[in-house]
Image (cartoon, rainbow, N blue to C red; front, side, top):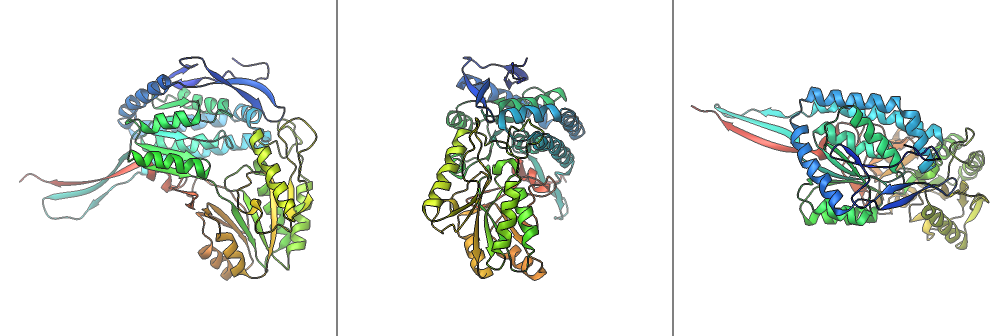
Amino acid sequence: MTTDHGYPAVRMYIAGEWCQGATGSTAPIVNPATEEVIGEVPLATAADLDRALDAAREGFRIWRATPVTRRTAILHAAAGLIAERAADLGRISTLEQGKPLAESTGEAHRTAETLRWHADDARRAYGRIIPSDPGTVLTVRREPIGPVAAFVPWNFPVGGPNRKISSALAAGCPLVLKASEETPATAMELVRCYADAGLPAGVLNLVFGEPAEVSAHLIASPVVRLVAFTGSVPVGKLLAARAGQVMKPSLMELGGHAPVIVCADADPVTAARRSARAKFVNAGQVCTSPSRFLVHESLVEEFTAEFVKAAEAVVVGDGREPATTMGPLANARRLTSLERLTADAVARGATVRTGGARPERPGYFFAPTVLTDVPPDAELLREEPFGPIAPIVPFTGLDEALATANALPYGLAAYGFTSSAATAERLSDALEAGILSLNHCGGSVHEAPSGGVKDSGYGREGGPEALDAYLVTKRVSHLLAP
C-alpha cells in the first residue's frame, strides 16, 4: 500500500511478520524538500520490543545452525533483490531523506555490492590449529556472538542499516535493528529484500520508536550480546556506557570533524575541485565529510577561488528533479545548527565568500557555503557541521597544520593533498584518524575497513575486519583418549 505521495505505508518487521505495533502509536514522516507530511511511522512499545527479542533468540538458534553455503546463498539472493529494486529504494530514500535520486540509487547499488562482499566473508571466518603436545588437539574457533541490537541514523537510509545487517548475518548473528524514524520506509524495503530472499523468521527484526526508550530496553535485555551503533559522539558514549554496565561489547562508528591538509606542493585547483565534490555529497551530511580545510598560505587564494566556483555551480533543489546536484538537509534540526554555526563564525570575524543562508523557498535547504578568515575560536572549527559549510584556514608550516588537524578529540577521517611521496608518508604517519585518503576525498569502501579513533569510536566496518565484532574467539584444548 502507498500513500498519495507514492510513499509506502510503513510497518515494523517482527518474527517474520509486518506489523503496526501493539498500540498503533505513530509519528509523522516529513519530506525535507517540501516540509510535507508524507506518512506515519509506527512506534514500538516494550511489548513489541520483547517480541522482537524473543524472535531474535529463536532466530539465533536457527541461523547459527544454518549451513554456511545456505546462509551465503540467501545473502547473495538478497543482494540481487537490492540491486533489482535499486530504483525504488532510491525513490523512497529521496522522498524521506532528500538526497538527489542519482545519489540514492547509487547508494542502493553500492549496498548490494557490500552485501555480496560480506556474504562471501561468511566463508572466511577462519579458525586455526595450533601445534601442541602429542595426544592433544589445540584449536581456535570463531563463533557468532549472538543477537545484536543495532542502531542506525538517517543519512544513508540504505547503506547505513545494511552495514550492520550484512556483517551480522554473515557472521551468523540475528539482529533487532532500530532504524531512523525519519527514513523508515527505506529501511523497511531493505529488510523486505532479505525477507523475500528467504531469510528465516526472527533472524532480522526491524523496529522504530522513541530512541532513548528503545535503546535502554534492548541493551538491558539478556538476549542481546552486542550493541552496534552509528551516530553522534554524545549518543554513542551514552549507549557504550549502558552496554558497559551490563558487560556487553559494542561497536561504535561515531562522528568526526575531518581535516583536509593541502600542502605547499599540491595542485590547488585539483585539490579544491575534489574537496568540493566530496563536501557537497549528501549535503555534507556524511560522518567522513571533509569539514576543515587547512591550506598552505601560498595556495589559499587559488584554492578558495576554485572552491567558491565549485560551490556556486551546485544546483540546490528537490532531489527528484533531474538537474538537482544537492538536496535539502534531512531535518529542521540540521538547518538550525548550520544557521547557528555560520552566525557564530561571522560574529567572530569570518567572511562569507558564498552562500551562508537559507534560500527563500520551502524545505530544509541551506546554500553551499564557503567561509574564510575563520578564527580559531569559532564553533565551526570545533563542532562537526554535518552540512554544506566549508571553512578554509591558511597555514604556514606542515607541523602547524598537523597540530591543528589533531587538536580535536575526533579521529574518524582525514585527507591530504601533496605531490611528494615523503610528505604523503608523513601525513599517513602523523594524522590521527582511522581513515585517511591522499590526493582525493574518497568515502568508505566495502573491501577495506572503516572506523575511528579517539572520540570517533572503535571497531571497524568493511573489509575482513567487518566480522570481528560479531564473532567470539573460543580456544579448545582436546586431550585425546588414550
